[in-house]
Length: 561
Ligand SMILES: Nc1nc2c(ncn2[C@@H]2O[C@H](COP(=O)(O)OP(=O)(O)OP(=O)(O)O)[C@@H](O)[C@H]2O)c(=O)[nH]1
Ligand SMILES: [Mg+2]
Image (cartoon, rainbow, N blue to C red; front, side):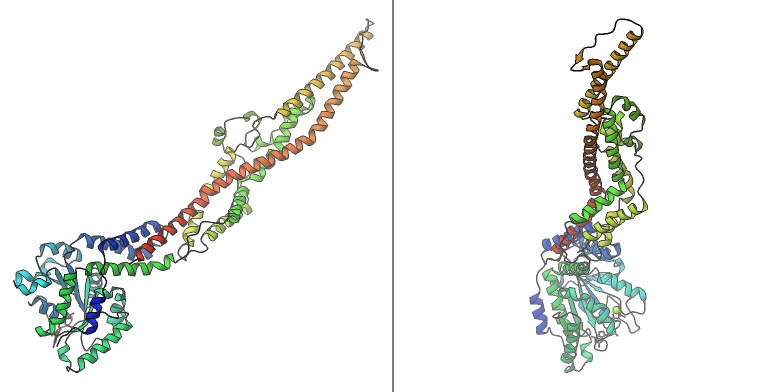
């Protein structure tokens, strides 16, 4: 006795149609997700998604006019018997010795040509393919045109190869008819390992209780109710559940009707793939979570990074040298001319660091880019401070991200660590420290120093000449008087005094200006070092955050039914 229960009709009516374009858009979103996370998340976690994209692409490119339905179940449940009964031919051997079916058999309703490529992909050998139409040309078979029915080996097999074959095929077919028998319908294996796994494929799942003739007629509804309860526990509420008898054509009517509807709707392939997308999306959900994509590390963390970078780059040493160099150069330019030469003998503090010295003043910055500096290497403390600052950047940036991501963010933050020392050194070497041009006031003060020194020298010469003439008894020079003081004396003493006074007055100004030069250099170096941090640390981190945002959006699109 076969009938479709009321619940079966309800389930069929309740099925929503899957729009092919919408499905393709969802698959495209899964593909976008995979592109976004490529190289960032562990490959092992992405295998199901890769498999889906590949499989779905192939399935959709192959015949959409065919629906592949598999008969799956434990050994002896009657799969081959149902297969033969539906085909009305003895295509797949039915046996007493278990398991009987070792390789998948296929029966195609309608012309075989269109189905061949599909069967090649599914992996059914040509000698196990049969064509229903050519075998028996009957009009009553047209309702099944487009059906490709597969008789699978047993999934609870003692033969490992059977189980592997079943698992492979269950991933490829459009619809599964699970065949159970009155003895084994409650078996743990079928429910835990198979039916439960298909709870997202409810709309392409049919369950049949075969060998119903072996039960007293009054028992059938009771067993069906019990099986329904188990299916509900499996998460398969509402799936079509029928009873069949393979040995009686009348006992096949319900299953045949269900298959006719499946073929007519031409929805199974799309529904199966939609269920696959649901499964994959649910599996990936944990990887992406619902965290809002972070904008990146906050300003104070970036400041911390920049400070650590500046320390590692030797900015304090360079700015100290800038201050000293300013004083050195200013004193050399504005000091008392007699001590300037001595000043110049001392090495320029910036030259010692192989940074632009006086001779390079105004040199093209690009030239100085070539040379590596002799700024001291970072100390162990500076290196570890930099490591901690980079770690802090990664931690802050990944603070709200799901567990799979912080590793990727940290790896990105450290990805260019090896290039940092050279990049920092090049940046320091290429920074205009602001000492290139001599300030105008240096020249003015320097000129005045020369003038007063010249006056002192003229005064001295004049006096010396006067003494010499007097000593030789020659007529004395007529010394003009300025007030009470002879002019040469005034020139000598006034020149010396003015020179010393000017030098004394200039000193605090030089010190003040040197501090300013240091501050200016520090500002410029910090800005340049920050740019290195941006390029070598923050940008890679932002790229990962961008990928996270893309992955999250893509997964959201893929989840939209
Ligand atoms: N009475 C009765 N016997 C059936 C029915 N269906 C199958 N059988 C018998 O059950 C036994 C097993 O049937 P098969 O069709 O070979 O079972 P199978 O599921 O293909 O088994 P494997 O190929 O080993 O996985 C055979 O002896 C069938 O004649 C049925 O509806 N009623
Ligand atoms: Mg069989």
